[in-house]
Image (cartoon, rainbow, N blue to C red; front, top):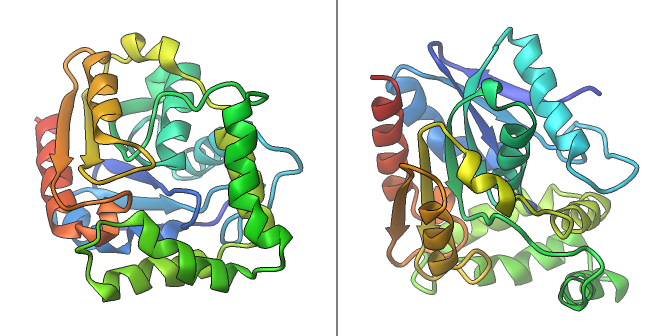
Length: 257
């Protein structure tokens, strides 16, 4: 697989994994603070996103393999992983499979499970997400309509436009497959096994990964820190980058001691 990724800076590595409607460009607000803190910034396009090829079937195996491949190419035996939404699920999958490859975890706007892939909730969820495309809507049209629903009502319009612009680059095929992938996710049984420094960041007004759920998730991970950002929806790294970056850098300093 030819995995698309970007690298900036030197030092201990932080690998950033994006969500369903994004790509490695969705992490551009984090580059400077990470590099200035003395860390190497690495952002990966998940399978189907950017120039990384689309998998043939849903599932997390290609997502995990993409991260391994990049780490191997950069000769990283381990790294800190920062995963947002879908990327946070991938991070948990990596830890479950090869915990020695993760030094620390930052989980943003994600969850420990989505439930059974054949459940009624999952079917209704996918039907609702796919209906616009089934009715002929293009991804740029969808991005403009859906992006405001991902953020807090107080979010500045330029931030909403930034989210929409990145989402516009995602193909409908990649979006569909990624959505099908997240409905297969369940790592609830592995939370208590996580034994690396872990920070969970939730948005107080996030309807996709509700803060109470993430707080409960944090309570299952020994020693995990939990941060809830006020007036923030599902897209903290963009809509509230200053607060997100503050806690990101604080966490990196903590794990580097």
